[in-house]
Image (cartoon, rainbow, N blue to C red; front, side, top):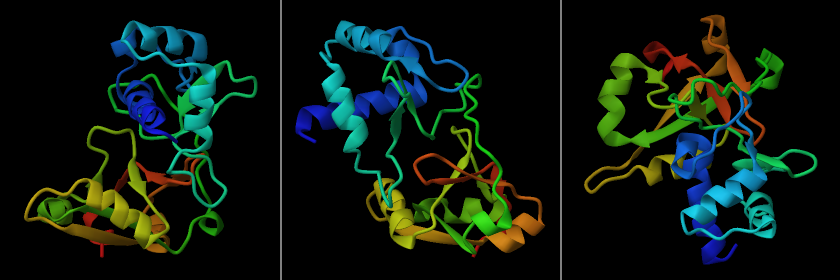
Length: 194
């Protein structure tokens, strides 16, 4: 992706995950936005985007790994686009159709990267979704570390929490997996964090 397309990707994240109203559009209950309305809304904000730009952003997203799509997906005829996960809890009407995973579909360990300044609060409260609809988890320490690194401030470092999915599922935690390979849960109790 070139710089312009990276800028489009960031703006698209803001629209599809956090606040579609900034360009005057709405998302349906599955998080889909009409592509034509999206492009018109972006143009009204001075962001001139063509379908080919969106196609590149979707197909070359840096978050795409292991054969999974990245942060965004088109429907089959590319008339709609959505974020695959990470929706702000303000978008309560958006409920992506995640299927609960069985114990065979979840790795034995999942990881969550965060800023060290949040560690004590997390150890008391557990992992909670905060402003999102789910807690985000990874099956790779490296990915969790990348996520934690994005939240760093001066004089802080990344902390990785490790979660035994067997213990968590025995405690009633339900795991889901987004289309782009991110594991999700409603919350992870503090006693399950290592």
